[in-house]
Length: 441
Figure 1 (cartoon, rainbow, N blue to C red):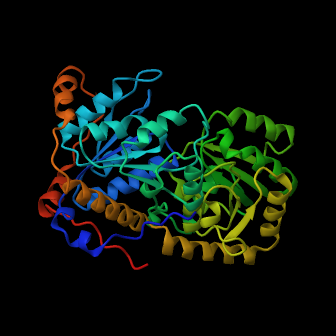
Figure 2 (cartoon, one colour):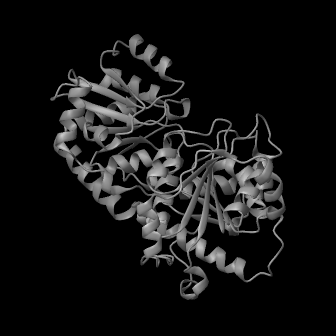
C-alpha cells in the first residue's frame, strides 16, 4: 500500500484566514545532539521562524543538551531542556503540557519515538493538534512498541520521511492508516556545493595528499551505520593513493580503528571526529559512501548529492527513493563487502563517469530535496489540522491546571534563548505569515 505523499491541501484550507495567522509551534526531540532528525528540526524550525512564527524547540532525554541547541539559538528559536528521569518518567508529560500552556503553543510536532511517547499525550492535554514524524525505522522491535501504539492515539497526523518507512510503520500496525502521510526530507541546499578552495584546505588540515582518491562517510559511528562494511570494502578496493575519511563520533570508534589495523589499512583510514563543517569536508571527497543497515531518508546522502558527489549506498529504507542507480551513484546489497568494493573500484577507474553522476545527483537534490520544499509540505499539513481543530467545540485545557502546578514548582531546565533584536524587528515588520501555497504536483 502506497501512502499519499503530502503535496498540498484543499484550496479552501489555504484561503481560510484561520490558517494564515502567526503560529506558536513546539518541536519536541529526544536531544540536541548531532543527527539527521535533529538537523531536520533545525532547518524546519529556522524556516518557520523566518516566516514570522514563534517556534519553541524542546529536548527531553536524560541528557538532552547538544550542539544543535546553539544552531537553533542562532536562528532565533527558543530552546528548552525538559530532561526525563531515568526509566519511565510519569511526570514528564505533565511538565511538557505545563510548558505548552505557559508558552501558548498552538501545535506540537514530536520527532521520533521518545518524543511521541511523552509529547503526544502532553499535546492532547493542551488540546492542540499533534504531529509525529518518524525519521527512520525503530531498532527496538518490541521494547517500547506498546508505548508507541498507546501514544499514537493522541496524534492527529503521523509523517514518514519515505514510502519504505511508511510501509514498515503500517506493517507493524503502529499507526492508524488514514493518519499517515509522507513528507520527504530536505536540506538547506545553499550550504552545499563543489568548493575547490575548501577541498584544498581540508585536505591540507587532515594531511591528505592533493592527488589522493578519497571515499568518505558522514554519520555517527554506531552499529546501525555499519562503517565496518566500508572499511572492509576499502581494504580490497582502495587504490595505492586511496583514503577513507570517516566523519563522526560514537561507540564504534575503537572497534573500527582496531579493524583497520587488522586489515592493514590503518594509515589510510582517517577519523575526523565530530565536525560541524560538513560542507567543507564533503568538498574534500571524491565519492560518498553510505553503508548503513537501516535508514529512513538519510540527510547525509542528500547533502553529498547537493555537494556534487557520486554515491554508493546500501539499498535500505528510503535510500532507493533518493539515489537513482546508475545515474547518481550505485545501490548495493546491505552488509555485503564484494559489491561495495566493486562499485568503489568502478568509480575510481572511471573518473569522468563519477563526475557525471555527481552532477546528476546535484541537479536531483536541488530539484526535489530543498528544506524550503519540505517546510512547505509541513506547513500545509499544519494548516489542515489547525482548521479541523478550530471547527471543534472549545474545551477546557487540563494543561492550564498543570501549568499552575509545574510552572511554579519545577521550571524546565533553562537553556533558553529569546529571539535576537534583529529577529524581534523582523517579527514586528511581519506580524503574520501565511502557510505557503503547495507547489504544483
